[in-house]
Length: 82
Ligand code: SF4
Ligand code: SF4
Image 1 (cartoon, rainbow, N blue to C red):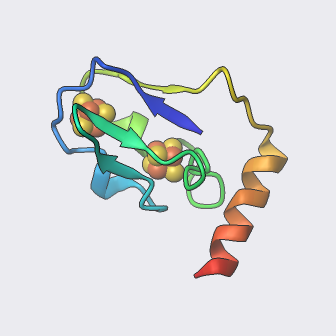
Image 2: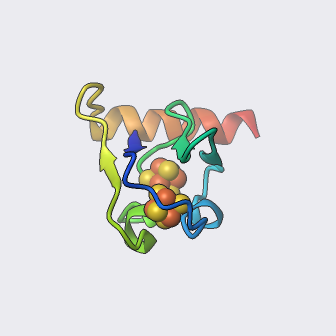
């Protein structure tokens, strides 16, 4: 999944762009639910939140890397849960 760093300026541009409703307003900054973020796999070629963030503070969570197959699997499980 992706994560939002503390560079976030709380502009709220990213939240409506997420196809998985993974982004929410946290206590200090916007945050991403890791179990909902597929890095946009299944929906778009590029992470939509990264495309719109004006300060480029949305990054890949390097500590929990996921393969394309794992992201696709997460996408399919989320679809089944709908
Ligand atoms: Fe949502 Fe896609 Fe951003 Fe993940 S990468 S938070 S799925 S918009
Ligand atoms: Fe924060 Fe970037 Fe989202 Fe704006 S678009 S709320 S700066 S993460």
